[in-house]
Each structure stands twice: as structure tokens, then as C-alpha cells.
Amino acid sequence: MARFETMNSVAQRQPHLQAGILGLIAAVFAVSVTVVTYQGASAPGYALFCVGVLALLLLTFLVYTPPLVPFTTALIFVTSPAPLLLSLQQSALISAFLLGGAIVAFIVRTPFRSMVRDPLFLPVGFFAAYGIVSGAYGMVLGNDVAYVLGDSFQVIEFAAVYFLVAQLLNNKENVHRLLKLLLGSILITILLELALFALGPGAGDLLPSWDGSFISGSLVRTIDIDATILFAVLINLYPAAASRRQRLWIGIALVPTVANIALSLSRGLWICTLVAAIVSLVLQARNLRMRLLATSALLSIGLVLVAATWKIGSDSDVSLLSVLEERVFYGVSQVELGIAGTDSMATRRFLEVAIVGPQVLAKPWLGHGLGATYVIGGYAVLDSGTNAPIDNHFIHNLYLVTAFRMGAIGLGLLLWMLFRYFRTVLRASKRMPASVPRALVVGFVASVAGQLFLSLTQPTVIDHPTCALIACAMALSLRLATVNSLGYNQRMEVKNVI
Image (tube, rainbow, N blue to C red):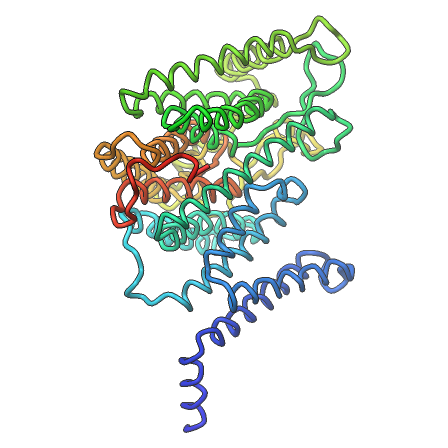
């Protein structure tokens, strides 16, 4: 008994020892999961070596660095080009590995009394807790274990990122450092995708491609949802910049960002960007609104001129503007075919509503549990390999998929969380003077509003890896708008942020 008390007292006096023990447990668990996922014990030696090194890195983070380090690393990872090289499962595993390390380090190092309160903790916590319950419910119903774990992780990832941002970014230095790293990571990814676009199909399969009806060959698509969030932030920082030099650098960053969004050939990203720009105009301070409008108009005119003169492929008569127009007209055609009830790949989003909608009504309150699938024709699913009916998991519409898997309770919790977020941040932002912090808040709010429109065709809010950045944007905007103890200077120069 005396020996146990001695060991316990030593552990209490050495928090690094506790962190090391917990970190070792987390590392061993992560390595075990990785090895089992990757061909079990027969995995190649280099794979085992890599996961071993990753485990040692996590242990080092926990013992020798504050929790902000692994957390920042996790956010940089999900916004960097790294996920382009990995499968979705591998990306999620690494993200869970780093976020788990940050959470363990936070629990070990942070006293309970020093935890920061946040107006969104209750709705986010309820949503995450219900997600765990819905995952257990899905297991009871016999849903595929891999799907259940994947769905559950995405809900937990969103809540974990939100919680860690609210707790760890407790001073303006940490906020500035994280913003610099995140915006830089997103911009690097954007530039890399543009380089891959320039290389064309010969760049490999890192990016999706599009085969137009009137061009020879394929056109690489730079689909990067994070680019829309960066656009919303930059477009609001531009009029708030204190000097021409700062506006010049922000304008330079806007050019590849807008190009990346345009070359995505994604109507969803275009609408998301348009909504973010409109919300920015509505929320921006009156004295900066005209400058923001002029910047948006200049970017639009420049995009049209470049697209009209940029020739695509070997056919010199086909311009990029023609491709953009074709995508818009094809979208109109998809809507017409969907309303007419045509069954094809072009109308798969309408088919999802027609198929999943009645199943929502069959279990309206609890849903079918996380991991639930539905039967759809293989012709409507990319790379299905068959035209016969198949069990499919992915659903494009955020609100439909939430109601289908988590029922009216889950959808209600999601809408409650979003309502509380917008109400709180908009009320607080009205009291902020025209400044860089306010520009950041408006940019983040506009980006989240754009993502909610995008989520009609892509469930980004609870979809890895975009859910991590969206949770970060929500937590940062609330913190900037509501926490006065950070001591922000109203005349803060934009160079401290970018």
C-alpha cells in the first residue's frame, strides 16, 4: 500500500510521466489499428516502420510540447496537399491520431478550473454525444462496422476541433500563429493543384478530371473546398488592410484562390463562393462595403476576360469561358432531367431524395443509425462497376443524410447548433468596430454560410476533412467576436494576421 502511494505521489509531481504513459497507450493503440487496417501482420516492413515513427512523434508531442502543437499539426495536415496522396481512410486515421494526441495532452496538462467557457459548447456537445449514441444504435441495427466508425469519427472530429480551438487559442499570439499556418497551408495546396492542372492528365490521378462534350481529352479539376473558405477570409481582409502594400499581397493571394475555384468546374463551389461574397457584402461595415464590392467586381471582370482568352486543348476555338458556360448549362439540364424523373448518373442527387426520403419517414425520430446504407442503381454511383442495384453509403445532401441516419433528433440538434452559432456571432460582431478582427469574423461567418449552401450537394459540415476546418472557422469567429479578455487592438495591422 505504501509503495502504491509513493508511485502515485511521484506521478502527481511529474505530469510529464502521466502524459508519457497515456501517450504510449494511445500510440500503441494507433499503431495496432494501422497495422490491422494495412494488411494486418503481413504489412510491409516500411509500413510498420512509418507507423512506429508516427507513434514516437505522438509520444514526443505529449511529453515535451503543449497540446497546441499536435492540434496545429492536425489542422495543417487536413488543409495541406497530404490528403491528396492518401485514401480517405488513411487521412482520417492520421487526423484521429494527431487530434487524439492533442486531447490527451490537454486533459493531462489543463486543470479543470482553467477551462474556458464557450456559448456553443452545449449544442456542440449534445450533437457529438447524440452522434456517439447513434453510432451505437447503428451497431445494434447491424450496419457495416467500417461505415459506423467512419460516420462516428466525423461527428467526433468536428466537436473535438471546435473544443480544442476554444480552449487552446487563449491569446492573440496563438490565434495569429494558427491563422498564418492555416492560410499558408491552404494556399500551398491551391498552388499545387493549379500546377497539376497545368500539367494536365499526365500529372496522375491526384485530382479528378472532366471529359467535356466538345473538347479533346480530359481537363483536370482543381476541386478544393478549403479554397472557398480562404476566399471569404481574404475578400474581407482586403478592404480592412491598413496600407496599399498589404492590399497588394492579399490581392496576389486572391488570384490563385479564385482561379482554383473557377477551375474546379464545380457548380456547388461556385454557388458557395457567391453566397460567401453576398453575405460578406451584407455584414461588412458600411465604410468598407464599397471597397469590397469594387474588389469583387474587379475579380469577376478579370476572371471573365482571362477565361474568354484562354484556349483549352488542341482546338483553338474552345475557350475556358465556353467550358464554364457548358458546366452551367449542364447543371440546368440536370435539374430539368431530375424534375422529369429521369434515372441516370446526371440525376443521382434527385434519386437520393426520392429513395432516401421515404426511408426517413419510416424511422423519423432516431433514423437508421450511423453507417446506414440504402439501395440505388449502380448506374448512379461513380466507379460502381455495375448497373445492378447496390448498397450505397454516401449521400450528397447534409440535411437529408442527417435525417436519414440520426433522425429528427439529430437534424434538430444540428440546426440548433447552427442557429446558436449565427445568432451569437452576429450579435457580438455588431458591437465590433471596423478592424481586422471584425473582417476575420465576417469572413468566417460568410464562409460557414457558403458551406451550408454547398452542403445541399456535399455534406461538408460533417464530412472529413472539411469538417475540421469548418469547426475551426466557427470557433475562431465566436472567440474573436465574444472574448474581450484577449485584448485585441482595434487598430491591429493586417500584417499580424497574414
